[in-house]
Length: 119
Image (tube, rainbow, N blue to C red; front, side, top):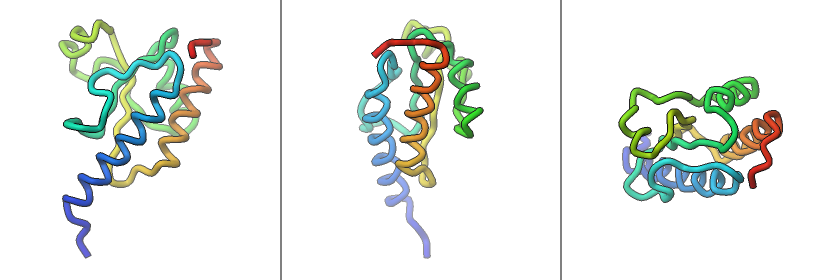
């Protein structure tokens, strides 16, 4: 049976809303772009004060969590937000709340590793 794009879109919006909510709990983390899951897709870029995005990415990778780090071929967008680089996590039909929770715990682990006490 087909899933249907309406259900795909509904899940993407719900999982992105959950991710945004959980990411707001991470002290020192700034979401770049809309902070609500309205009028946005399932990719969320952010920065963590005191930890370079490539370092965040490496810690998460060691935990089996895939994100992207850098300027994502979007230097003008980064300039608009006044940052050199960001970490980007993307969510879709197959993303679960448990994976979002693991992402947040991984971010907290990155902060501990780099001795960042923000938040």
